[in-house]
Image (cartoon, rainbow over all chains, first blue to last red):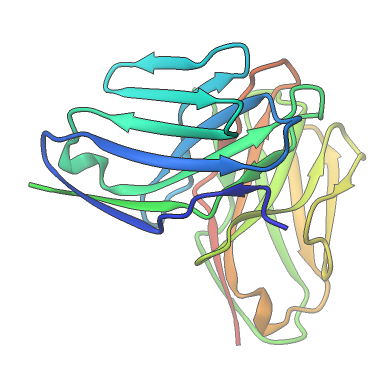
Length: 113
Length: 113
């Protein structure tokens, strides 16, 4: 059973606008969440993370929001750039669970110039 | 910078062959992982290891085994390759500390014919 879900397989956004990627999880024990970016023929690269003691974490153009009561997190990219076009995976883990991560199915973002 | 190196980018094997996928990391990480990525299914954990000679089954271990004889090296073994094992295989490593993300290699695209 998929414990981490990304319900939008794809998203298209105009350059300069905001991209919002969503992720839902079912396991209330998850307390560490990450976003990864993946280009074709490359491994995923770590983008940004958030622990459950926070509800927002920001790094440059990337902000992750966590809503624990809704078991929902989102990644905001603003402004979006063509180089952001990639597949984005969210992942979740329990900090006491030995670093086992559960991944969503990914959202393919296309930023249109 | 963490480097996770997978020995092959592309492999083509025949059904029934024994296949070895090799992964080496250079950051003295305790934890190492093997995932496979398939369209619509995201990243699924096959096996992971917390220490030399230690291994734990992930979500889809059937048809696979692993070996970790040295801290920096984690091998995935397909005892008798089948066509449903055609996939992108991703190796990752992480430290044991809290809030430690996974660092991925570039992946091995395995085709079993």
